[in-house]
Length: 341
Image (cartoon, rainbow, N blue to C red; front, side, top):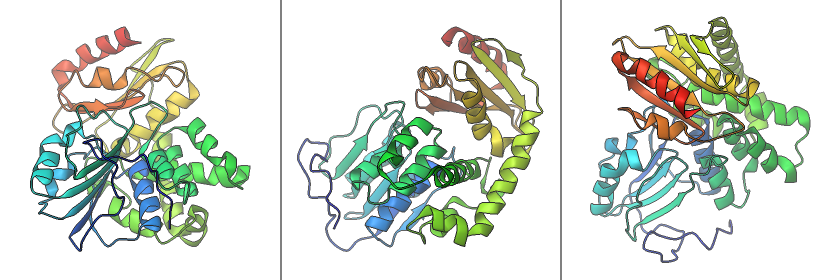
């Protein structure tokens, strides 16, 4: 049995028994990116539980609205902003559901319910996979490393690996897997993804070690790898819309490949230019824009603050985005982006 963190508390300040009670309907609600998927893989390897899976593309974060929670139901919520799901979280809690909520995005005020246990940490070098790894005392750290690499927290991931037996080649494989799983989550809808995030979670969760998933499930790994490199090559051929020593803005076309690669392209740019902030703006069929924003790798601040100034904007201080930036606000966004960095 895993020795859980004795400091985990409910949101009235009372230490809780970490086991939920009774036989009820379970829901696993998670972001469809690498961080959300790998957080859940770790948790369910340690705490097997049959549950209804609720997920979607990376930017589909209002997931709690899909759950009609009843008294006694158990909800595990991973890697989606509490602030963006506040009303539906209150609805579930008021219905009598028990909720375990783990996230690193902007949360706002955490509701005070004895039936809500939360682990929220908005620090720029933290992700949900790391929080779950701490909660499980490193029981499935390799999957935690994959999710952390996927969230572009390379330094954090390497720190997690220090007490493992992983060699450089294996770490390189885990980094690639994290990037590819994260890449798979981007798209305007499920039809643009190589794998439905729920399917990818189910494939991954069959393996206690992600290295075994890479080798035994090579078809999935290779499918993601091929698509990733093809899409990234197209993105890298696009010249910047504007570029200075402090910022760079790239505009990608209204194409499925552009929507798939926008987030990892932002990460790639950030890793190559750690002192520069980057915005990747992708045209949408409605004439508006999808924005992926990354703060400088050496100054992970300000991304969420900037994006939250616009409708549908949010994220964390190191990496944020706007789901539907009105076309007539693009110039305003770029001007504020310049001012912020």
